[in-house]
Amino acid sequence: MLELNALTTVRDLLTAHPGVFPILLGHGMCADCQANPPPVPLGTFAAKHCGGNLEGLIAELRQAISTRA
Image (cartoon, rainbow, N blue to C red; front, side, top):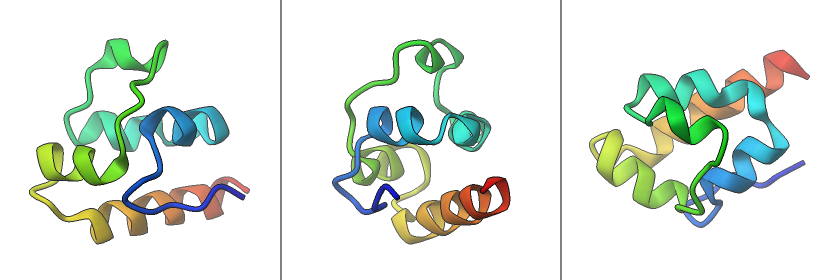
């Protein structure tokens, strides 16, 4: 399983778990990024799109991944 932390990239996350894209989209990710996810670390994504709440983003992603497994 992919470890989720501040350095995990959006690209790695969506490659391993494409079903979590709606979560990132809900936090402001561009819909065009689904086809070509950026190599941006989750820490950077959270700072820009989640008010810096990396822990909340990771918790949301983990829950979505566990319900899809």
